[in-house]
Length: 92
Figure 1 (cartoon, rainbow, N blue to C red):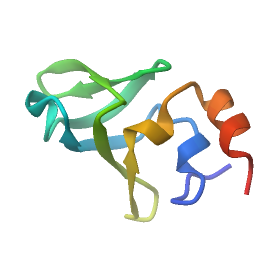
Figure 2 (figure 1 turned 135 degrees about the vertical axis):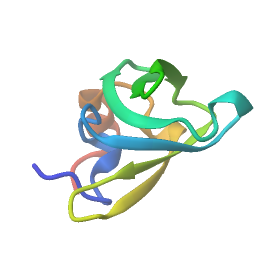
Figure 3 (figure 1 turned 90 degrees about the horizontal axis):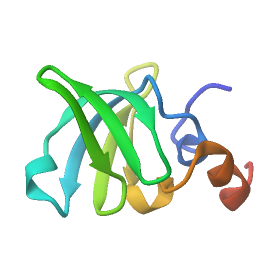
Figure 4 (figure 1 turned 180 degrees about the horizontal axis):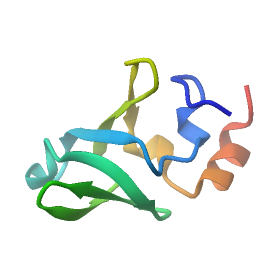
């Protein structure tokens, strides 16, 4: 399945380019790179200076999608593993 704005909440995030647009931890604002791992509550982002562990809760993330599209997602919407998010939000 292709990642789109409408399905990103329950899609696999590993491999996507991401930027932390806002976060309750000001030191994480502006962090950008590629998602290399995901846990229930965090994204591990590979940046130029190494890997950063970013809590999903408290953040607003901008994901770069295919065809130069971007999707902005509130961290609370992506809490949990992809299969848990799929059950929570259902397929549309």
